[in-house]
Image (tube, rainbow, N blue to C red):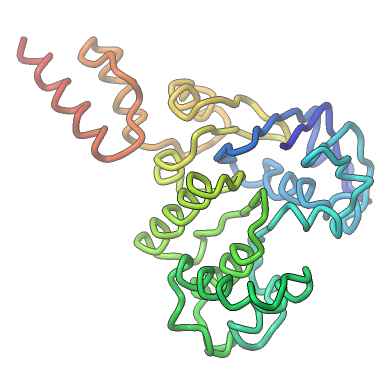
Length: 283
């Protein structure tokens, strides 16, 4: 679905590469989380995946990026947008209409969706994003978190094969963040949408994603199943990633011989780990 081989990119006028020696395979139906410190190149990677780099942000581009069988550089953003839906970190720059309903309708009409499908898609997108009550609201009157949900709804309505999201919970409270992740899990599990998401709320990301890629200095340091990556906590710490506390705790318990199970990725699993460790400590 997504294949990156030996890719490097340097913005015009920059002395250093934003991405370097980048290789990554994302299979159809994957749910991949991208984590790393500020300046690691995470946003630039999302621009590569939707064709904004190197078509709008120009510079020196090397290597190969294949999206749904297409060469991303040759295809360009217009052709890639038929398969890839993007939610940017700067949501203000993504919204084009003045009313919520019109924002979702704009994309559907622009993609030539048959008229009889439009209303069901709008209703589904609004309901799935949890903003049915905002349908007729002026976008200028919405909070940052509500605008984020509108951007997500407008992409859901298009039913892309791949969703690329750059820190979509940045403006959301914990409850709304969880709802958003549950929405992505439904799209991924029930509808087969491939998800690639850059996220700072690592504990929540680890609960929902299937794979993690850790970036630093424009490179992928390590990548794999969530639990496997979390067990390489020293790599995350060296990169300056704020790893979940439960990951640090599981490592300490493992070092003391009190726990030998898998690394927890949810509160329920963390509770099980603590009960197991307490039982072992009493023996």
